[in-house]
Length: 224
Image 1 (cartoon, helix red, strand yellow):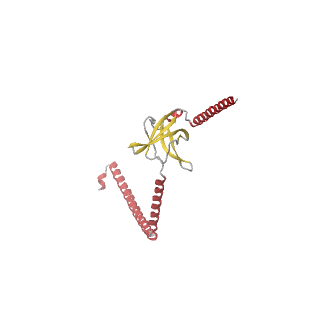
Image 2 (cartoon, rainbow, N blue to C red):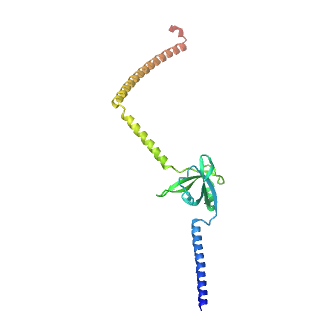
Image 3 (cartoon, helix red, strand yellow):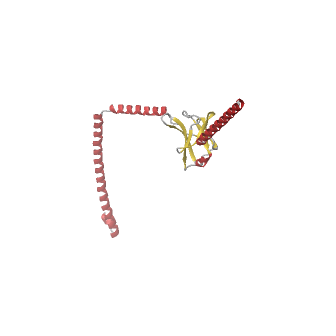
């Protein structure tokens, strides 16, 4: 009786073990299917100068849709167009037709924690991107560099305002007034010259009309 109980206990233990393994396999398969781990993929290499903290496993998105993940990040032996980091991404095959156009790869920041991801933007204009060759990506925005730009702009604005404060407004207004008066005098002189030219043109026209009339009448020399 004891032997039969032990055998029965061993059989039940074996069944529980096999059931647990099958259950774990099903869970892993379900999660992998949801995450696309079991779906066929193709690889694209993208070159960056700075990945800004991008890590392996980060999502790859096309117009906001997850279409793959970052599979590997490594350094190049030598720079290519100022890029020294190679990022390999795995893209699900079912999205391949969506990339048969002009596409741009860039690194974006998402969420409060600043998680990095690879963003792909497609454009109907331009030549189709060759996905079989390394693609030059757009480096992420460097917040420190941006802060420096704002700092330099603020400093320049402050200096300009200080220089403006040094201007003698009263003297400036006096100079502008003198310039305005000079312009008025100049305009009057121009008007005078125009009036004289108009008077001369009228006189010349009258003389030409008289000469033409004399020529027509045949007694041009009688004028003299």
